Structures are given as structure tokens and as C-alpha cells.
Amino acid sequence: MSMAGPGSIARRGFLDILGGLAVAAQLEGVSGEARAAPVDSTVGVARFGGRSLQFTDLTHKLTRQFNFDPSNPRISMESVDGSGVAVGMKMHRLALIEHTGTHIDAPSHFGEQFKSLGEIPLSDLVVPLVVVDISAKAAKSRDAQVEPADVLAWERRHGRLPDGCCVAVHSGWDPFAEMARNQAAHSHNSTGFGIEAARMLAEKRRVKGIAVDAMTIDSGPNVPSYPVHQFWLRSGRWGIEGITNLRSVPPVGALLVVGAAPIAEATGLPVRAIALF
Amino acid sequence: MSMAGPGSIARRGFLDILGGLAVAAQLEGVSGEARAAPVDSTVGVARFGGRSLQFTDLTHKLTRQFNFDPSNPRISMESVDGSGVAVGMKMHRLALIEHTGTHIDAPSHFGEQFKSLGEIPLSDLVVPLVVVDISAKAAKSRDAQVEPADVLAWERRHGRLPDGCCVAVHSGWDPFAEMARNQAAHSHNSTGFGIEAARMLAEKRRVKGIAVDAMTIDSGPNVPSYPVHQFWLRSGRWGIEGITNLRSVPPVGALLVVGAAPIAEATGLPVRAIALF
Image (cartoon, rainbow over the protein chains, first blue to last red):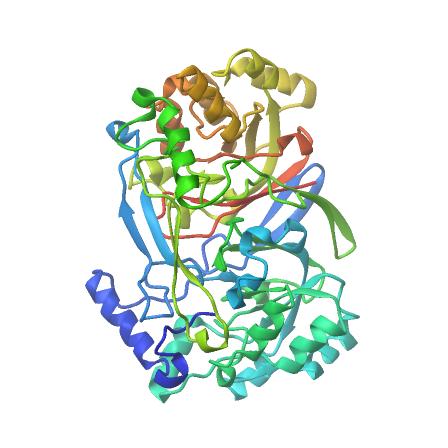
């Protein structure tokens, strides 16, 4: 989570963020209708070696407007000449905050002594996916958080959480719509995990990762003390923020592939998150 | 492919590159033994929904030393304070050339009018994987390239290429070892695809992507005119450069998942390339 720079979202609310987006959009000459947009062709079937698997894209398209931190520099792409410039080669030097768009938080996001992105083994990134739907309570409170009771209710319907899984939360959060809502209310609401549920998933179950459709694994009232980030990431586990399309995935039985380039020392990175089932 | 900046590898050879690596390694205080290192835990088994799949990581770990373009700025990570700085949050502004490490070339790498990374649908990135082994001829010539005869020989053993597949080439190329070899020989050899094979895969078969363990889909003698890049990418298809671990994957029957974050306007990006079978 890196919603805000030194000025802190908790003090400023989301107002500045949406304002920053609008100003930046004008500066960059884009239309004002920047929206969170799941990429095209999000669902399909792959056939290989006599098998077939459905796939679903759980990733928001990452545009220059998709930025939750107005105090930090936005995504930039600077054209660079390559050796093929004479025959039409184009490329950029790309710069971005590691925690932008649909992204992973590595354990090192909360301390250099913890695993960086490049140190997370693939066996922790190709894991069973479980979807917990809290959209009913999120419709009543924009700060709704996952509690142990939500996990227990899920288990009564679907059985015990599979070992080594990722628990992803569908709250119905949409990055741009929620920012607009917060702007109108001068608030900084967000859905997320509660600390009791995080402790339960780490200590009573064998969960490798958590994912949220909001932009913080901590719910709004826990920003900027970040108890879930502190506990979960420092336990060596990872989080994904800004996941989407969870309604297209079964509550249990899918495989999550976290397509995160293994960059040494990175504390996080935009990813391609994919469900197969 | 972005091996060289305006100075061009074809004119300077790989000497400068390895020199650049060594100097940079000293400057950054790392040991001299920078090597291409496939990430840990490269192989395992995932169980989900009553199924099980083996997985293999086809990705080189991307370090600050993994850079093939001494004329361009290296990977940089600048610490940035987030809203959780008081409770230990760490994060960076990351900057890199899009074509670094194990990476994808989007069609827009050879022209802005072609699809950028964010426009490639997931259905083109979750595809059957075929491995063609040219290591025997690559051991004789460091410029060995895939020719139509190699594809036909593969098909005699394994059947027709599956529709929509990625054809990946195992030549035995290792980025750092090959640069050292080129340095010693003042050469710029590289394995890759020949233009005749590329045309065959696009026009006579239904291939969506090609991948090489070298750092260019064009073989060394075709740099910097890049006929394969020009033809293949402008046909709307993608390439992966710097793939690895292909010996751990069957010649046919695996699924390739190209974990590329869908960044609008990007011409390429480091990826997590994963085989499932």
C-alpha cells in the first residue's frame, strides 16, 4: 500500500488525490473520463496437452492516470533510441512507484530485512485461490473489513481453506468510483482486512497471500498505522492490492498465477494476476 | 530487443557491455560474479480444485547488474517515503528500460501504430508452449538460427504445431556467459530466429508468439537491421527475449503464462514467464 506520500491520506483524505488525477489528466492532454478498466478479453479457455482450463484476468489496465499518490511522481515513459532506431524501433525508459495499479506488496515493503520481490519463490506465487465475498456488508459500510466470522462462514459453505492458498476479497470496490465517492464525502474510506482475520489466516490456517479489490489490505480507518501490513508482510507473506474481476472466478477451485517479474530489491511491482480453473 | 543504444552493438561489439557491467558492479559495491541466475524454486507442483499441474519458472532474476545496454541508464530504485513511513513502510520509484531481463516485446516496439503491451489481450498471453531445441547446432555456431527445417523436424517427432502456440527456442544461451564469450572474441554473436522461419510460423502455421533464450529474436548477424523484429512484431505478434529453463519443460503439452503487467503505451516489460504442464 502506498496510497499517499509524506502528506498522508489519513490527514488529507482522497480529495487531493482525485484533484491530482484531474489536474494531471489535463496536463497530459487526456480526457477526464479516466476509469478503472479491466483489460479486454478477460475470460477465455486455454487448451494444452489434452487439458483445458478457463482463465480470467484479475488485473486493471495500468494507464498514466492510474495513480493513487499525487505527491509522488506519476508513471513516466521517456523515449529512448535503441540500436534499431533506423528501422523503426521504439522503446521507453519507464519509471513508476512500485505500488501502482494492480500490484504486489513484497514483505520488504515493511522492512529491508524481509524478502524482496526477487526473493519470493514461484511456489509462493502459483497457489490455490479462494474468493471471500463481503460485498453485502461493504454496501452498508465503505470501511467494511474481513473478520474471522467471514472466513468461518466461507468455510461452512466450501470447506476448510486449502493449504498454501491466497484469500482474495471481493468487496465491490472500484478504484476510480471509490475515489470519487471519498472526494464527495471528504472521507478516506476503504474496505480491507481486519487484523484479527489476518492473524487467523497466518496462525490458524496456512495462507500464503491475501488480495483485495481495494487499494489497501488494511481498511481505511487503519491507514496510516497499517497493522495488517505490519503483521502480514513481516510474517514473510505477500499481498495484492487492486485485484479485480473476482466475480468471474469460483469461490474455491481456481489457481492464482501472480505474474510478477522477479526484480531483486523491489518492494512491490505491478503484476498480471490470472485465475485458471 | 534493445541490446544497444545509439552507439549500436553491431559497431561496438559486446566488449563495452561487459566492461560496463564490471564497472557498474564496482560502482555499486557488488561482487564481480554477476551471473544470469534463474530464480529459486523454479519447479514445483500446484494442486487446485482436484487438479494438479507442474510449474516451471522460465524467468531470470532481474538484478541491477542485468542490463544489456551500457549506453542507457541502468535500473534505478530511488527510495520514496509513503504514508506509512512512521511504521516502517519502504518503497521505491523504479526506473528501467522496458526491454531488460526476461522481457516481452510488444508489437509497438516497432511502431506506435501497433499494439502496446496494455492492448495485448490475455488470450494471447496464456497459450500452448512448444520448445524447439537447437542447442546442437548452436554448439557449433554462436549465430545459429531457427530455420524452417528445424520446425519441420520438430513436427515429424511431435505433430503439427498447436494453433495459437508460442514457439520457444532452447539454444543453450546464457546472457552473462555469452557476453563474456563475445568480449573475448570481439564479436557480437547471438542465436535467434531466421526470417524464413518467422514467416513460416506466421503464414503457414498459427503461432501467436516466439521466445528465445538469447537476448534477441533476431540472430546476431541480423542486428541492427532486425528483419525478424520488423516482420514479426508488425504482424501484431509478440516476442520474449531472455527466457530460460526450457530444458525443464516438455517439447509439447505445456501451457505458457506470460505474466506481463498490462501497462498502456509500453513497448515491452520485464515479465514472469511460467510453464504449467
